[in-house]
Image (cartoon, rainbow, N blue to C red; front, side):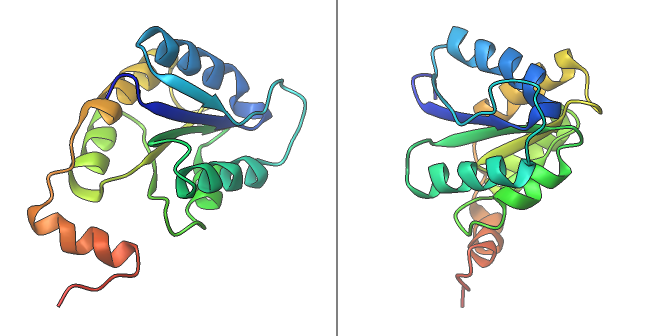
Amino acid sequence: MAGATIAVAADHAGFDLKEILKGDLQAAGYAVLDLGTNSTVSVDYPDYGAAMGEAIAAGKAERGVLVCGSGIGISIAANRNPKVRAVLAHDTTSARLSREHNDANVVAFGQRLIGVEVAREALKVFLNTPFEGGRHAGRVAKLSGVTKS
């Protein structure tokens, strides 16, 4: 997946971790679409979750990375877009399962809840784990509003 475009976005509480992960992505050969924010000045996380949803839905990025203080609010905002399957990951296991079982296309982290090294490892796992398909495909289709008969 190296070379793919990965969108990143954060609010003020996630800015520092976003910048670290953005650097890791660039060093690994990904093209990065930075949707902001660009400082620790207070902003509203729903705006950045919505921007991620728009970027994914428009095909501007294959996957996305979101960061706010807890990762909760920004992932809820992104999931308002039906093309997004954002998951809040706390470790490599949740990152791996979100890809294998849910075909998640956006991962969210809480800067106040996760260590930098854990987030870095979880992001690597998220980007390198394929969707298993099979019995999970029908369930993922239901998430997108498509029912399987």
